[in-house]
Length: 148
Image 1 (spheres, helix red, strand yellow):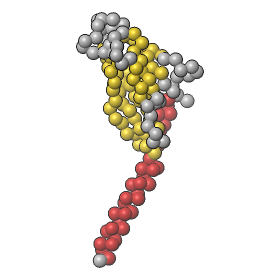
Image 2 (cartoon, rainbow, N blue to C red):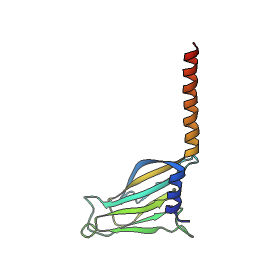
Image 3 (cartoon, one colour):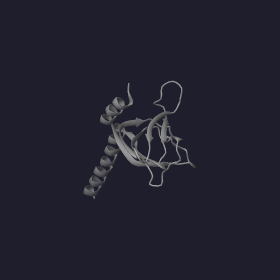
Image 4 (tube, rainbow, N blue to C red):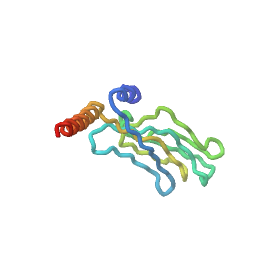
């Protein structure tokens, strides 16, 4: 099953919590790793934009990714080839990655900026049970107030 279809299915069963995410790759920092938290929740990284910084030279910049989505050997897969004079930015739609995800600047000095969302899927059943627990406590407090 593909990640996008399982993510679409999951959205109907779970509450997504999204946080803005981003990183910079350059000659000094050629990799960026997005790890999943130890919270037993499902995490996804939605990569939205890859763009060159204003100070990037007019050379080829290749960005690759390695994640759990990769089949077989974990070899980095190129996802963008940018050049200031030709294509300084790309917008992505539907690139959903399961952490841990490693982004790499395979070629070029950068800076290259990556941005998107880090999605955490909360189990809706747990949320509803927690919400119901609070509403019962509130009702109990009102009953106690009326009895006094």
